[in-house]
Length: 260
Length: 334
Image 1 (spheres, rainbow over the protein chains, first blue to last red):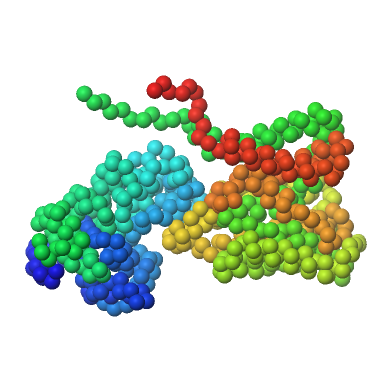
Image 2: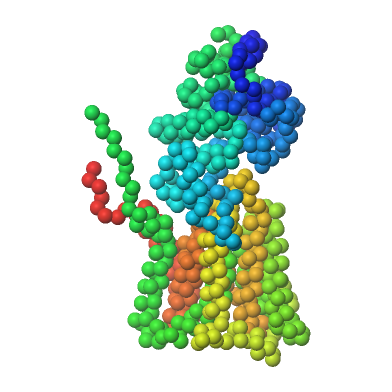
């Protein structure tokens, strides 16, 4: 395992742009449970980093540290070369770090437009400016080539893929530099997975650093540039996508990486 | 060769009907009630009787509009009847003690906001279920009203302007009815057109999502109980002005009528879904049934049984018949 970690640091420095977000020696403990035991991770602009690992390997905790939901017990976070301290998702948003949660955080009883503008509704005088929000929402979705037939439909009536797309479009509209996505494809049908993966590629093409947490290994090879593998609260390996294959990643996830 | 075709966009009308099924169903039911009682009794569909129905329904309608906000957040306020009684009695006591009636009205509105605020604080910031907090409120507030009045009715004397609120007319229309319509329109606009209405729906639909996008979710949740308190104060003032007295026995069973009206109108107890128009129709349906049965000389004791049964049937119809996807036109051949 230590061999795998050492080999990564040699290969990851080759020709890569400067990281936008750097995590150094991140520790997080919940009671007696050591969720993160000293994690180092670099996230680069315009690149998709796949974060994989078994359940309870620490990938969710790590993503929540990046998103500001958890504050690490120890370690350093650097955003664009400067040390960053943030203690909530709202403070992370000020640093242009966004997260799309697995539950999407959409309001089912509110229409598509309303969800895109949730919490920052456009107003004209005391009233909601529905017309302007509708026009802006159309632009927002068109920029990411997302097709929703009727923007005044309640979100409850949409498919899983459409809901995922709306959550991603909302996060993208905050002009993030780092966008974390937690299992965006896990509950979707085949065609919807394709649409979401294409969407991730379009977000990436804007220069956004994307962190993708997933259990679906085949997705990694479609969108990711680098893969970080978590195991028992540590990052055991990091691979450029061209240097690895499905079997190696599976071995790394289940803890047989050292023998391969 | 495989040909791919895209789904055609379905009928807009079907979407509309699916989204407003419950309002359409209560509207149908309301019209049926009007027709039925109109046929059974010649006096029912007269202007003076209908205005009388609206005047009597005014306090229920005003509180039902506020209750729509409360239920939209997935909450409930069981204390509204007791709150009306307490404020009704207090208004009479304060005016009898020599306070001018305009000042008394302001004090009563503040009292309603304060009581609602205390309940809202327990529910929102302390996380106690709304059902429990307002059930306690139901008992405490009614008890306080009984304690203050010792069970007697307290007369209000020499306050002409005050009585006008409950008995007066503008252009032939009763003042309480006008006030109620005003409140309903206000409720409709707030719910549909303002950021506050959107916040209420969002908190009821997905509290966690509302919190994550930076909405003041707890404050919004507490605020609906303040709105309910103020609405109760308005209803209590109207009652006191109409009857010319304050009594701890006012508004018995009021909370049940209000909640029935809101639920009948299609507002979901699970939160997130609210219809002001439905609430107005629900309130008027209950009022019309009560009035119609009296005009038919059916025993007033029987009225409660009929009202309860009709509420059960109407809501059963709502869930079984109307709350499903509607398909218009022919079924597609497979």
